[in-house]
Length: 155
Image 1 (tube, one colour):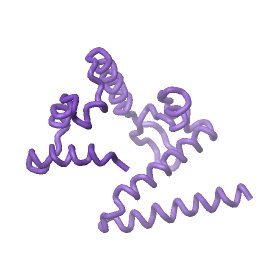
Image 2 (cartoon, rainbow, N blue to C red; image 1 turned 60 degrees about the vertical axis):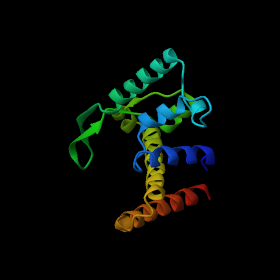
Image 3 (tube, one colour; image 1 turned 90 degrees about the vertical axis):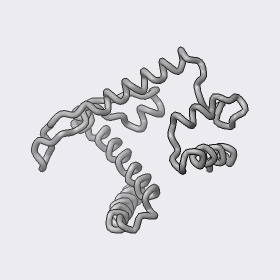
């Protein structure tokens, strides 16, 4: 649950701009040390610049795409580098070549688990859109089948 003070401040900023919340306006409001948003920003320009360069590096890595040969589908454009959840948690972040992940069954399983978690997040995020009801049903069916298989293996 989000901090009520932060939510109220974001709503105030949006209301002052016709209902549209723009990041530049959020930063402008957060500059005030009395703002509930202020502590959530890096105000040291050197540290902020380094964090921004790291973000830029992540963007470069994320957009690297090339066609690779995939089983049953031929050549298809795929992200070259993938960040596994376990790497983000335990190893301080990082990316692996997708071909290396697909070639090792244990890493492939971890990538699949990450993908399934992202499907769960997608389903929760867009559950209110009835236009996606078929997609939501398909996700729930897939996830329940995966859970049943995992439960049978554990038994």
